[in-house]
Length: 401
Image 1 (spheres, rainbow, N blue to C red):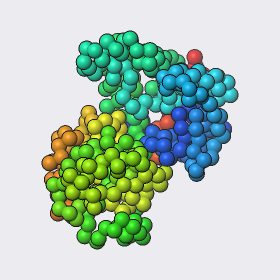
Image 2 (image 1 turned 30 degrees about the vertical axis):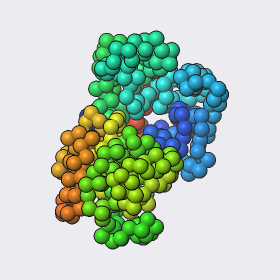
Image 3 (image 1 turned 120 degrees about the horizontal axis):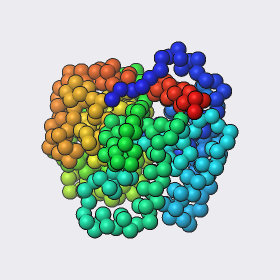
Image 4 (image 1 turned 60 degrees about the horizontal axis):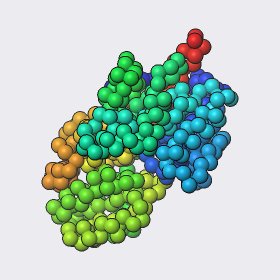
């Protein structure tokens, strides 16, 4: 599916002074991919709109400072109750004073609703589950709350758009809501990146590699994730065990207890000296620059920002195919990335890593193709233009209503 984009001149003219509310759970780069999406998009749009962030938390270390309306919720309530209270508070805060509301949250306040993850109704009413899990979902007040909030969020109305971050999400929405909301369309606007100059002699690269004790001949694989296990870390470890000792792995993200949790597996596979862990950080750039290959055998990604970011830094990428990774629809096997046949195929992953290590011309070809044909088409400027065009459609529709 193509990205709906306005022309650069139209976006530059913009709608300076229009008041935009951005509703999100947490605002800041350190919280994860969807949250970083919000920061970078608002960074672009803040040049042309008066933006107010409405969220539970605003990262004090975030370099983008915007007006902030906090939503404070008691931790004594379970998460599904807090979701309702958040939606109600967001609706109240955005009722007046804004020309447009751009929401990343379940609820009913948004003019633009961006769906980043697998729809709740798809998870509980479309996916095949055991009979007892299905029965439990019909009796669960938690599932009922999430289904109700999502249904209200997606309900068609004038001056309202539901945006999907990938074609995979569109397919899931259509399967889940084709009876409830027949004929509903979902524009696709994927996340973006800032394309970097590929610089293999970058001083940051040398510093990071020295810090981890990697030798010049070592080939370093990288995995960046808030939850590395869901992104296929076990498969990566199995693949690493099949490779020569000069292949290393760096895992960025995850809880501080992750290493202790994996220590028995690392000992069994004799990987203790070949696998390094770095806690979650808002600045992943040094690690992209230090690595040689990006691995992403994810088990569930509606899009997958990390492999796109890796491409923007010039890393050749190995990733899961659809339907496990929504970003896979934007790449071509053997041309812009290497696609696994299945995310848990460790032998295939090991072969692909070895190919990159032994065939530098292959790595160079895929790196150059990915930067010119994928990353350059997914810049934050392009994403912001697409949203600006969508905002103008909505405003015109509201005025004519």
